[in-house]
Image (cartoon, rainbow, N blue to C red):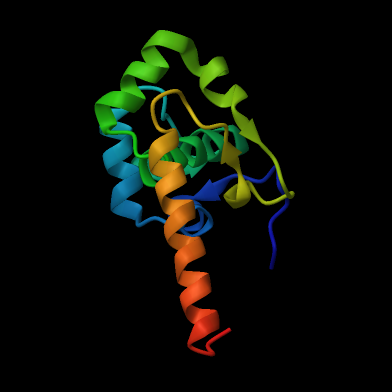
Length: 130
């Protein structure tokens, strides 16, 4: 059964959608004050669509853009949550497919990754693994 985009997600559903482990989401809650899922009796977490968008932005900054935890904290502290999320651009309806604009100072990491992927594609083509 597929949930609607507005439905709340359990921690396992949120982790699957974001492509991270559940313990990573719990860890991020301790490091980022703006990550606050709703908790029911017994401490069970439910993630709203807005929570998923925030977590997707955090994942992108940490895993693709090369930010450190302190760097993401500073970005949030300096710009606030609205500016933090304004860089998110939807390419498709899935929250997991969000992309952030490249923040100042991290473009070289993104460029290095793009260069490596292009080199791998050329090598695969030469080796007949296209």
